[in-house]
Image (cartoon, rainbow, N blue to C red):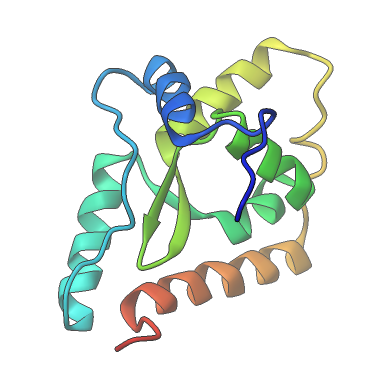
Amino acid sequence: MQQERDDIPNMATTAAVQGGLFGEDYEVAADESFGSGWRARAQALHKLSEERGGLVPQSALADVLGMTRQRVSQLVQSGQFEVVKVEDVPFITGRSLDAWEQDQDKNPKGGWRSRRGGVWAKTIVSFKVGSAIADVLVPDGA
């Protein structure tokens, strides 16, 4: 039997925090499934991206922002990043990234911008973004 931990927020708590950050239109998105056919999934992913101000695969976010995966996970768990799962692939919304960046700009101690990488980091991000999109377009069960 799985034991719940008090220090890890549940979905309702996360929804409440994110609702305050991203407006009343925010809801905890269940895992989105777009049916059969890669074209339908691609169109649905594009629409969802437009609705949420863009999408970045969570797997690529550490490299995009120049921080550790652990820090990204902490920001997700604390509700600072809005997560939408599509075909079991977690994406961070652009609107939550914008809100986080604006908050970071108010705090001059941060150094996350200076850690954003060069060609190698861009290559890694390109691979991870492409892989996440491929996982949506051609899910395991398809």
